[in-house]
Image (cartoon, rainbow, N blue to C red; front, side):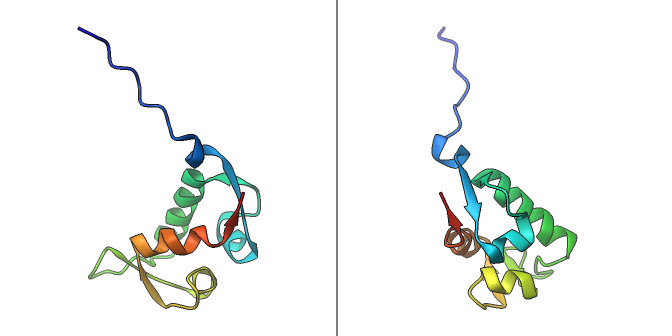
Length: 90
């Protein structure tokens, strides 16, 4: 029986990206892999209780997140990923 090789992480996700000024307020200004940036974003959301209590897929933005979310006060998890990628550069 052939041994399964461990799944290799996608290099595109591991390449460091630099957050812009708005995103840097939340995740810091150092270049980070996207995976790490998403983790820090979720840490911030949980620490500040910004996940909607009734609909857990929704994120309620505070002042810092509104800048990242194009001034929207509430976005879904999936929309958040798309909006955040507009605030990073390679």
